[in-house]
Amino acid sequence: MRATTRLALLGTGLALVATAIGATAAQAEDGGSGDITIDKVVVNGGKPVVVGTTKAVSAKVTVTASDDSGIAETTYISAYGPNPNYAQIWYDDGEITCVKASATTSTCTGTLTFDPMTSTGVVYNSAAATWDLSTLVSANDLDYIHRDAATTFKVQRASQLTVNASPEPVKKGKTITVTGKLSRANWEDNKYHGYTNQPVKLQFRKKGSSTYTTVKTIRSDSTGSLKATVTASTDGYFRYSFAGTTTTPAVNATGDFVDVQ
Image 1 (cartoon, one colour):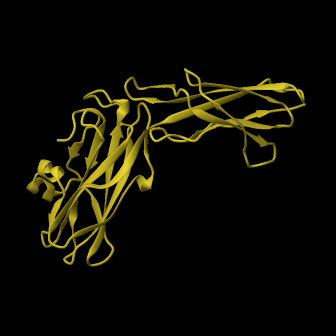
Image 2 (cartoon, one colour; image 1 turned 180 degrees about the horizontal axis):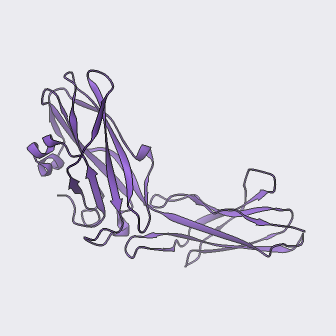
Image 3 (cartoon, one colour; image 1 turned 90 degrees about the vertical axis):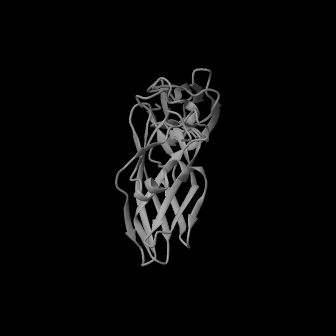
């Protein structure tokens, strides 16, 4: 196996053909027989898999493949992270649904489940990275194909962002102080901690408008806290907006309304 127990990743629906060939051997390298092809692989609709601190997150995987004899009703899927100390592949016999698009092509759908509360070990934060999706597909004439990295996808630590604008109400021309905090999931203690030294936009939406405009950009401090001041001019909503990083998704705070008198 590629990994020791860290991030629990449950692959739902392993093919019987994978058992026959051997899961370890199938993972070891690309291979196959005959003219079977893997045409397309999509994990989680092409979006990153975002995992918080307590709840397991499921991601749908679709594998489209073709063979002149047609695709059998079995597919093997698994995934693994960039470091063998940070990600566990758990194998689980189950069901993958395959739907024929034609006599030669089928799309098979399975599920990967990411659990930050795995009871078998610590989930290290370093598992937030680019993962590989491995798959094995068999055809009706016993052709098979395996790809160790049929596609890649990102696993990210969930983010949170708050905002508070005060005083409320405020007189026109007076100073408004906007505070908040940017935090993200820590998989090693299953809590949210401040995301430090990150650029965050302070944005304003005038009452009656649906569009936010960036007022200024500040950086989160050593605890993830945010603080900025602006001059009160008109009624509206303030929010903080974070663009995200490779390991942490973008997030917007819910706008806080300020009544300017």
